[in-house]
Length: 196
Image: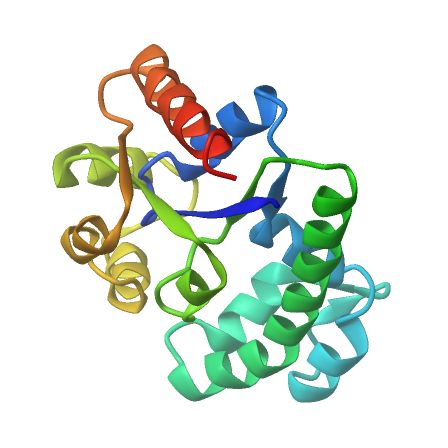
């Protein structure tokens, strides 16, 4: 039986780097964000363009144009989520079926808004990637196109880090370097592979 681990973390916490650590150890990882990128170049284009006219360019959703229509608009965001979330969930189910067919002891669902969307109910345990708020802010503000207002809007959509940590089965501290984070990932893999 494949143990399903949810992996999440607020913006700037190092979740993507941590997911790569699981993947490098041979653990199958389903990346919800990467799935959305694929959907925006294929299956979701028609429905998203119908809901938000003018956001597709040459048959692909232009994320910048879409962002201008939905960012900071709760109703528009809900509309987009009703289109995209079922498609992401279907891709996730295909991923898990393939992981089970390969006999994987452990599979990771890398979902940025895991708690916000109730995704933890599909997992046997959750690992939260975390770092002090100061380090998070430094990482996020170094990103191209980021400003205080945009950062605040993103944080407002996310369950606070302290709450994520409280609800997590595992906490991966990404503030002490890659080797330290990798050691935590390895400990989780060892612990969960024996319980699968």
